[in-house]
Length: 188
Image 1 (cartoon, rainbow, N blue to C red):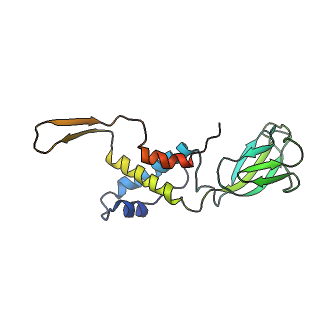
Image 2 (tube, rainbow, N blue to C red; image 1 turned 120 degrees about the vertical axis):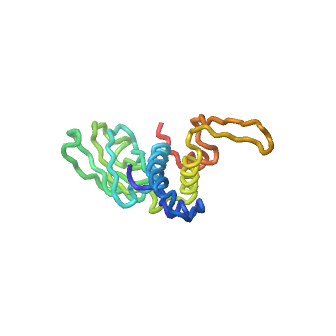
Image 3 (tube, one colour; image 1 turned 45 degrees about the vertical axis):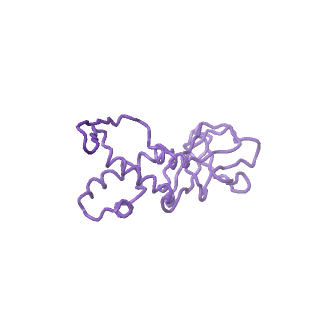
């Protein structure tokens, strides 16, 4: 699950909540919404800013696309000819370079194919959740707090008619989806 993308204090300030009546509900929603956003966007944002991430590749390509943009630093690139049992360190600026969110091969047109043969260790992400993303996360928490998938009854003042609305859409609200889509990583 990793680190949360917002805090109770930040959410309560954003939502204008001053009492402690909703703390348990907010505390339950924050990790769930954080996990949802990470899975929806295919990245974790803050989990690997300090703690390094390790990815394994097979080779056969000129570069390795790292899955946690933005990549801050590549600590090491190693290769193994025995399926990852032993590793040999490759040299930066001789064998490989970091370019944006990729590791690029410098010793030929492609990294030779070795199954589970390349290990890249790097740090990536943000020190703190980007502000526009955090607003989308807070709006999503509010959405789940207010739209609990139950039946909502609305009646116009002065009428005897009641309109019943079933919340059945599996779509995210457009304003939230717009923010999340800006951060969504697509590796297809």
